[in-house]
Image 1 (cartoon, rainbow, N blue to C red):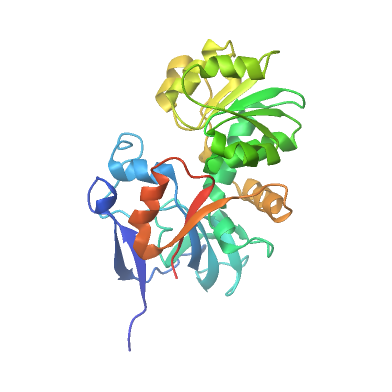
Image 2: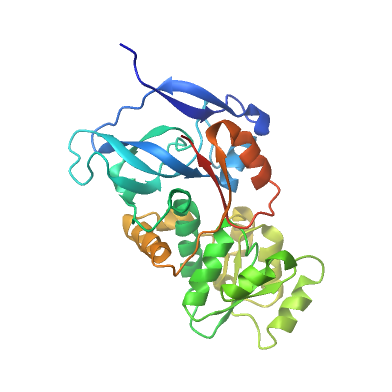
Length: 311
């Protein structure tokens, strides 16, 4: 009798994409309150590259050999003791906080999963958690009102595309900082594109002569500083990445963990299923090409999400 095995992304030391490999591993066994999910799609995220490189060691240390990944969507293939809310064959989406979703199978607590709406395709469902909950938290942090003007850096990235649409749905005037190649997409989703680079502050002021009410940074500390230089109060400035700068300047730094609830994830899934929010898929890769997927991600010029398709 052959024992079933799974395949999972691993790395044994900090480093570049070359440390990533796919290993045959024992099939996960769901504990009490967990289910085993056969993964159909799993998004990749910049934070995973940062953890793997070691730059996040002080905040998010790795234990080797380390797995990778939080986003996932798939089909329940086994249930642990006491599970009554999910059953074999259920289609689900959600997340793992064990750095384990970049795999063919993963055991996940049922509290970290919600039912996948049938309207969602696998790539969108499998990349919703990080961008959806992070975007939700970022918008909530600055509490925009209809008619206000909000600037967003990296507006065409994975989180940025979600933030732009959530803001537009609130009746907010959105200034999307991105390359001109994204102007058409941003305009179609309720935002005015503003070129990044030198003299950005001047271009933002020209685009919003009555002033900017809030700033959401999705790229780096220079944007947090720029927001304050433009006169915004710290409590209307949010960053999902520049934690040290946020602490230094007193701005907000809410992220996916601040909105990681079944209620928020269900709300985001319903918004995508209804067509209110689109999750652009930049590319999909098989699990064996995980390093190639991160090579594209680390160029930092993709619009939307890059997704692994394990099977």
